[in-house]
Image (spheres, rainbow, N blue to C red):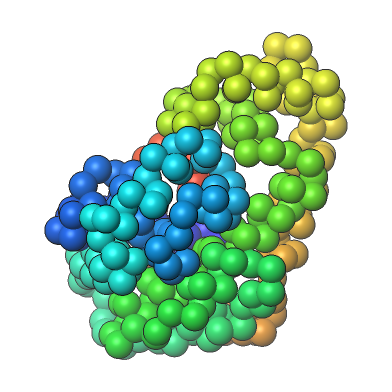
Amino acid sequence: MWTHFEPVHAVTYFHPRARAAYEAVGLRGYWRGYFASRAAPLGATEAAPVIAAFFSFAPPMVARALPAVWRLATPQEALRARLTGAVQALAELTYELPETHLAEAADLLERAASATQTAGRVLGAVNAALPVGEYPLARLWQAATTLREHRGDGHVAALVAAGLDPVETLAWRIAMDGSSPLNLLGRGWSEEQWHAARERLAQRGWLTGDGTATDHGRAEFQAVEDATDRAAAHPWQALGRDDTDRLRELLEPTARSCHALIPAGSPIGLPALPG
């Protein structure tokens, strides 16, 4: 299900209409819009809670954005901009789908999102507490966002339990799929920090000396992925197999259209939809 709701959420990062909506409220530049919109459900927060919750960004990078962005746009303005831009993006991507199709998908996705267990999941909780959208595309995007952040909170917990810090996690990703180190450096970590993280992973037996993933490392990280899936399972158990299958069918065309916006090698790490 992650491969079907994550692309719906991701339009807020990659679609031109979403970017334009942030710029319209004064959030010019990609990272201002990113940090303001994703942190806005927390209120006018300082950097420290965002460093902890977002996990993978270097603290100085977050501190450059927060709390300074709140002088450009209030959290309420950022929330309105992110929803407006996401709805406009989805409207462009789903214009061929009947309203009844989108409404049914929104109903089912909201049911799943309402079943999230938010104890210990800060980003999932604050998104679940936001008002329900008035129209199907707004409801669809907000439910996808709640489920996305709920899953992300569980993934961070699994990474912490496995003893991985943020830069080690990104260095492992680069070793696993050959993605560009620019993904890591683009999140504020230095090349020296990357090399040090690779050395720590090698000392743990996750990487060889030349940076290749070991069987031990693969098995340990698969345990992280399995823990993430278990932590994310409750909404789908609550929705039930038949309705979950129906929702996946309904989301398929939207997910494919949205997935096409995600750049190759994106740190989201979202696999392509099969077929």
